[in-house]
Structure formats: structure tokens, C-alpha cells
Length: 145
Image 1 (cartoon, one colour):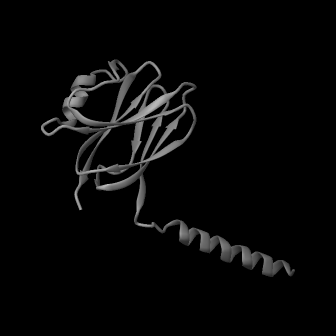
Image 2: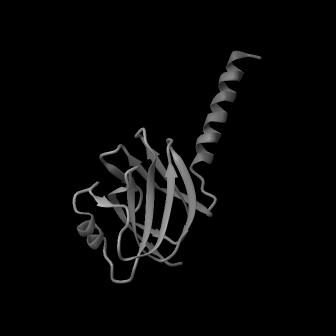
Image 3: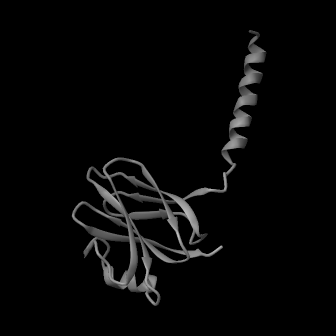
């Protein structure tokens, strides 16, 4: 095959892949990503999202099992309440008061993703280490359809 045709074909394939990569099916948004290094829990995602299915990813860069907790806060419980309860990141136990549902995933590797449906309300997103210590990452307000 002519080398120019090979290059042109490769360019067309790359452009097609890049254009398809930006498309979403409308069913699942992968917009909740946490990175945990054992000292810092970093959230990469929106502060407000529509309710529905989400793929949540934890990038655990430690050598130990770590967890992502996504907690739906009870009516009247605020993100500041969670921050106040935890105090110094990494010092509080892995349980928190004022939550109506807990979604947790255990992951020893990097990264691990899981799917969950979020419903209208305020959520708190946390990293938890192998000793059940907790690091607040971010609040997430989920709005109804």
C-alpha cells in the first residue's frame, strides 16, 4: 500500500476516534472522580449534577485498600456539618451522622470504577483509608429531572 494512503487512512481514523470520544450516550456520565494518595483526597467533578446513573472512579495511589464513600445527607444536614464532624482530615472514624444512604466501594488497585444511581439531594463525597479514617472531598448537589 502506498505510504501516503497509509498516513491519510491513519489520520482519518484518528479524527473519527477523537470525534466519537466526545459523544455521550446520555445514560451514564463519568463525572465523579476521586484521587487518594493517603494524605489528600482530591475530587474532580461538578458541584451540581442531574439525578441519574453515574460512573464513580477512585484512583487509589496508596499501597493499601481505600474506599470512596458517597453519602446522601439527611434533610437539614449540611456539608459544613460533615466538615465540622470530621475535623482534621484523616482523624475521624469512617462513620458519619446525618446521612440517609451510604454507597461504598473497596478498591486495592488503581483505578476502580463503579456505577450508581444518584437521586435528588445533597451528597458528601469522601475517601476512607484502610484504618477507617475519613477525608472529606467535596459536596455534590443532585437536582431532580
